[in-house]
Length: 140
Image (tube, rainbow, N blue to C red; front, top):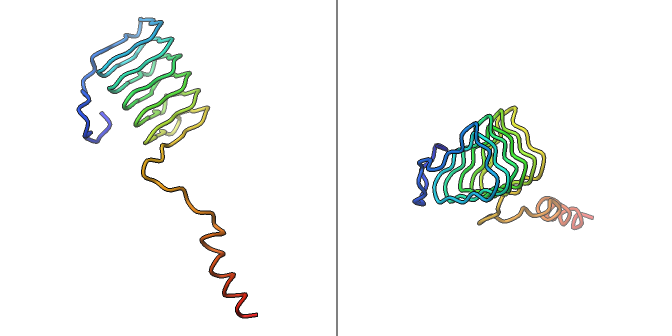
């Protein structure tokens, strides 16, 4: 679905479908993939992937492995990978390892990338100016 094979054994098949005429209110929890074409209000948690279709409307906090958004989401998102397509709209904060935003996609909120195995950059004064200032002091 997202172009890369995963190391985990998360099923790639869609097991749960909420159709375009369905309106789901409550907590949806699944171990498999979820495709949403209708309306969901509450919360959504899946160990698999979430595909939110173009006509989907989600008012919920979402936790999923990978998420593809073509519809509208109002709520916070936590996932391995989030892809907001050109018709996708998100109002909320996103916490991810990998993030893609297609041209035309909309986000209002913060995107936080998890820093697994990454060191923050050192301030410029510690990397650039430190050596050159010593050389100038010695020349005086």
